[in-house]
Amino acid sequence: MHLAHHSVGNGPPVLLIHGGAEDATMLTGQAHAIAAHGRRVIWYDRRGTGDSTRADWPGSGADQHADDAAALLRELDAVPATVLGFSSGGVVALAVAARHPGVVTEVIAWEPPVVAMLPGAEQLRTALHEPYERHLRDHPDDWRGAYQVLLHTLSQGRADLDSPIVKQAEANAEAILRDDGPLITARVFAPGELPADRVVIALSETPDPLHQAIADRLAQLTGKAPVTVDGAGTHEVYLESPEVIADFLRARQELRPSGRE
Image 1 (cartoon, rainbow, N blue to C red):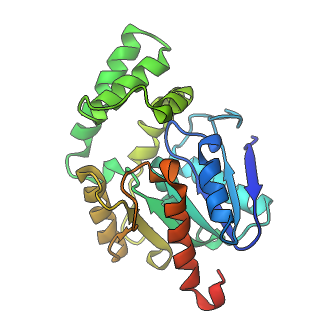
Image 2 (image 1 turned 60 degrees about the vertical axis):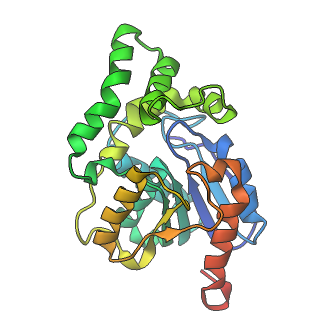
């Protein structure tokens, strides 16, 4: 198994985990913005995505990806690290905290879609998945078309399918539809599984109701309220305005004794 990865900067390590329909190239701006504040930033293509290989993929969802992330940190001598996961990458980050607490100083899950933890989760997941699954039955292997159907469903018809972010994401459509949707977002965290002293759930200033409900459910498990990131106006802020998350991380680092991890 090969994970294609990148590294920039010097200082306490930070691992970035991309979300669904994303790859490492889409986090390059965010990585450099964080590195500019004195951090060593590592980011990579998750198994099955980008330039990483597809051995045993899709496999066991968030747990498999968490094991990959922990192994990468150890391989690069970057333990312990801050692990920052975006969207479904936040579900993976939470799984890292649960399965490999020794490799992390802090895990920050950015609006993680742990849909399976909500009441009525099965009905919600069916409503999200059935339209694109129907498209794939009618148009086998049309991953881009099926991804557009998913976006249409998630946005209730308001998605801008011509936006630059969507066009970049279409290259990773198969991964989100085969892995993130049916597997990663199906992860359920049990009471006591997440180390509360090392887990932060981060939200934009105006999260959509689904992200807010999930964050509230996770807060019940950790006993810690979600953190709102100042200046984060959208879920995609890490792609659109990477300095916002970089400033948030810098402020958290400055709260640690002598600014150290």
